[in-house]
Image 1: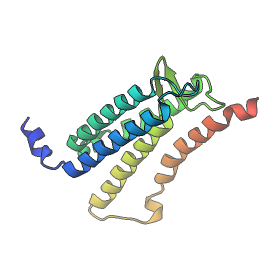
Image 2: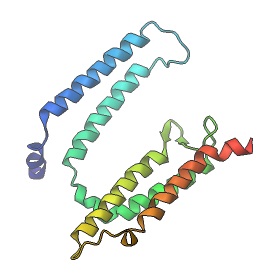
Image 3: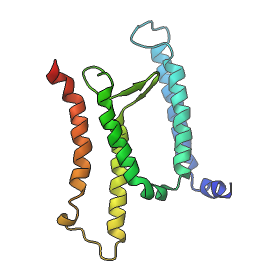
Image 4: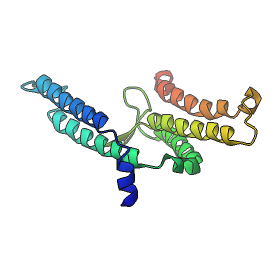
Length: 169
């Protein structure tokens, strides 16, 4: 609990307040555009879904501000590996609008390419921090070759997701 109080002093309340105002504005805009609209393309629950995601986003924001990001250095390979497994797993699920980009389990939908972006950021940040913290940092290209295949694998898998059904139909 003491760590929570210590970290709370670093939260910028003006930014948090601005985000709340933007969330309220988004709800007002959605309400104004969907009220009385019986368009079958616009779900009736769009407002409640927006509010739910805004609350989840605010909770995630506070959790992210209180999270010690240095812990990610220990698990960066795991995060990368899990995201690559998910990028391969999309091919086991049916295509959505001609692309194998989503994993859908009942009402939960996940787009692994978005998780892969986060995994690449974590991996690259860890890699760069390790180079910087080494006794003699070496920034020459021949010492940085590992970056290319690390980025190429998710790029190729994401590219294949979008082009798999276009060639088979």
